[in-house]
Length: 426
Image 1 (cartoon, rainbow, N blue to C red):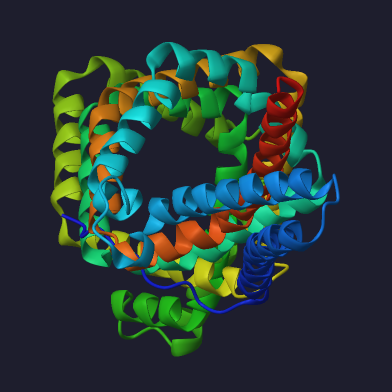
Image 2: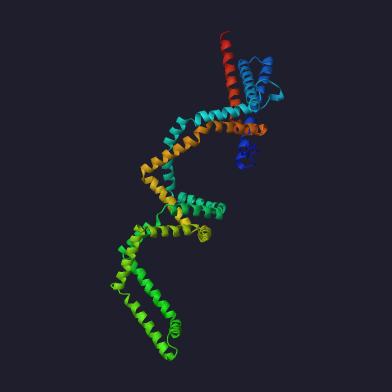
């Protein structure tokens, strides 16, 4: 099980420092306003003893109420994060004392208000992920970024693949595919199709060329074989003449076979068609082909071939991925861009993809929303209390100082209004 991370102090950065400076500035302003109201209150109280100015009572009432409001809101703000003056006053240090309950409430809130099945379904329907993906991939820069990211992942994926294990998987998959194929009738149909399209003529031409090359390359060997089989009393020049005559005759015959209308070609064609028919109808021949197929599938040579094939493919992939303009990188970029165009043009495909994404989320996220809520609660529970309080105070402290300022002003105005009403009522 992956351990729940502890909350570490935030690293120093410009944004953090700016927020901290703004918080300290607003805190000084709110505290300064409280002190100012205290000074005004004391000054007004002392002035009333010496002067009979009619506005002094109103100023004193405003400052007195403003000071009370400022102190009350200061207490409320401080009580969220710690005990005021360290005194064990009930219902203070609310966040540190209720951190675990806050985590549970936060997890339940997210589960009930963000991961409810009907909310998730409605949000996914309105979001149209496939349409957004199509619009995003329409930008060539985005398509290129996706392709580059995919190309960057491929070497890691290739490195994690076990060569021998993959070769076994390939062999097993190939073996299942080969076992499911009745090779003899298939080979017969291939031969018949090859003859029907005239492809066998090219094979015969190539066979004639190879035969001519073999005869010419082994001229001396043919002379030696002829000399071994004729009478010993014949002169050697007769042996050579006889061998040359045989060689010339064979070459002339092969030359005649180059003619597409030569009778022997028709004979070969008929033999191929007869063999193709036997592959489909002769039980003994079909059994023999099946035996050969099984021998090939069980041969160690196939293992060696698959291993070498995968190694060669892997080396070529690594070499291609090492180049930024490699064939695979270009193919990936073209494929990603093509996917974006296809999504943009095909409304049915977008709807299908959106339904699939919705089912994936509904089957793999929504059923586990309770576990997600528990995970959130566990994360909050493991956080360091002091660090959590410091982070929260830094995030919302500036706005809370506005509450203190507003409390000072509103309290003063309320006190002034009450004093004025009291004076009016005598």
